[in-house]
Image 1 (cartoon, rainbow, N blue to C red):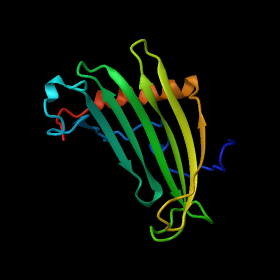
Image 2: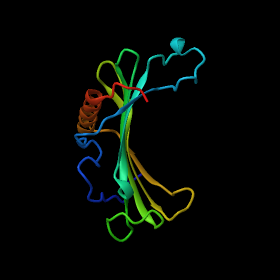
Image 3: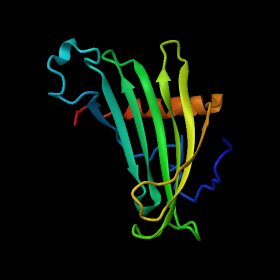
Image 4: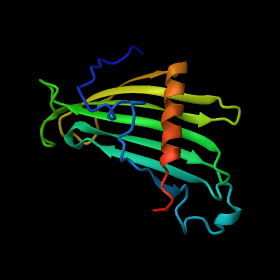
Length: 168
């Protein structure tokens, strides 16, 4: 599949895949499995696993979400960075929510191994939202470049450094 037509709108520097985080952005720490979902959580295969989630809203222009999963010893298991852009069909400014819009997504995520390797995928997706229930997405999948992996690792390191000490 060829890359879908893709032109990124002008956005804040943090509203880009693998971009720097806003100085005041703090991830939320949550258990991978919410309390009460597993009868004996201490014996579960995911006992002690946590996810650090950082959701950044750009209002009508889209959002960015970073998720980091750590095992019970704090070792990195998986990570992802995803950005959604919403712009007008005729100009790059985001239209009001009820109006048609061009929706573009970039995602990079996958498993992280102990030997510091990364097994993941990069996705680029485009759709036009005219208010229908399901969008017709054009998607392109690719292998992450070494620069992508290094960029994701830098974002992950920063999220871990900023992690909240309270679960929510």
